[in-house]
Amino acid sequence: MRHIIDLADLTAAEFSDLYKLTTNIIDRPEGYVDACRGKVLGSLFYEPSTRTNLSFSTAMMRLGGSVVGFSDPNSSSTAKGETLKDTISMVSSYADLIVMRNPREGAAKAASLYSSVPVINAGDGGHLHPTQTLTDMVTILRMRGSADNMKIGLCGDLKYGRTVHSLLHFLERYHNVQIYLIAPDALKLPDYMVHFLKEHQMPFCEVSALDEVLPELDVLYMTRIQRERFVSAQEYENLEGNYQLTAAKMKRAKKDMLVLHPLPRVDEIAQDVDDDPRAVYFKQARYGMFGRMALLLTLSKLNFQRPAKHGIGTDGVRCSNPKCITKTEPYLPLDVPVGARCPYCDALIELRL
Image 1 (cartoon, one colour):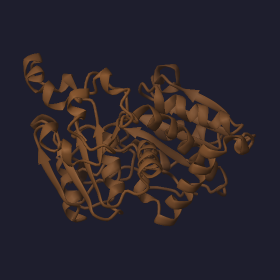
Image 2: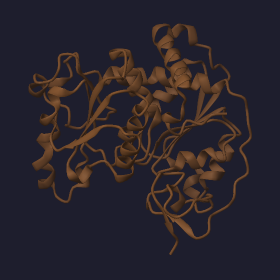
Image 3: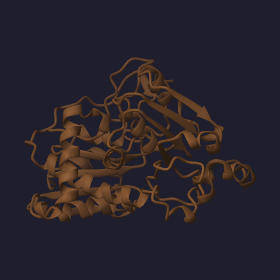
Image 4: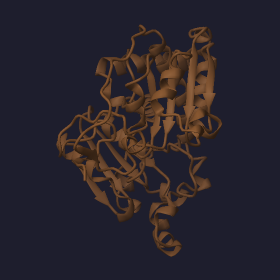
C-alpha cells in the first residue's frame, strides 16, 4: 500500500508510469469510464477548496467510482471532538481510498498511520500539496517536454504556499534547474525549505521584484500575495505592483514562457493576461483532474494492508511548529531526538518545557 503524502516520495519509475497513464487518459478518456467502478473515495475536506475538492470528485466519477465524505468539518463528528485517528480508522473501513485536506501541518502523514487504505494529501496547512505538484508537472512536461534545463520563477507567497514547497521538493530530481524566489521579506521561503534547497544543491536566488528576472524565465509560477499577512493595508499596497503580472509585463517575457498558477487568483495576474497563449493556468487545472484520475486508478489497484501498531504520545520532546498536527492530536508518536526534523511537518524538534 502506498500513501501520497509528498509527490517526491515516488520513485522516478513510479512517477514515469503515473505520467504516462495521465497522458493516456488525456488523449483517450473514454477508455477509462469504468476503470474504478465499485470503488469508493472518502473525501475529507477540513477547510475550503474549489479545484482540489471538485477535481477529485469529478476524477473518481469519471472513472466510474463514487464519493462519500464532507467539505465542512462542522458537519462531521469532528465538531463533537472526534480525533483524527478515529475519523480515519472509521472512514477507511467504508472507503477504498481517502483524500484529505486539513489546516494542520503534517495531518496527512498522521492520517496515514491509522488508515487501512491509501491516503492522499490534498494539502496540509502551509506544508505540502502533492497533487497540485502532480498537476504542475503534468502541465510542464506536457507543454514543455521536459523539466530539465529550466529557469523557473516562483512568485508571491513562498512562506505559506504549500504548492511552492511541494513543487520545490519534486524539482530536486531534475537537472540544471535554476530557481528564482520572488517574494517580499514577509513572505520569503521558510528556513526549512531553504535548508532543503542547499542540502540538495539546487541553485536558487532570492529577488524582490518580478521585473528583475522575468525576461530570463522559461516558467513563471505565480501565487497569491496574501494581504492578511501584512501589518497594514499601506504596506501591502506599496508592494503590490512588484508582484502583479500584466499584459504589458508579458511583452518582456520569452515567447514560449509558461505562466502557471495553482489558483485561486486575486489580483496577482491581471485579467488582460488570460488571452495570452502563454497563460496556461486554466489548462493546468484541467490537467489536474486527469492527473488525479491516474493517481486514483493506480492506488485503487494496490493490495489491502492493515496499518501497523504505533506508540501513543511522546516524552521529553515536542515539535517547534505551533501549526503542527501534534499540537492538537497529542497521542501521535514523536520518537525523534532534539534537533531532528518533525516526521509530520518538517519543523525542528525541541525539548518539551
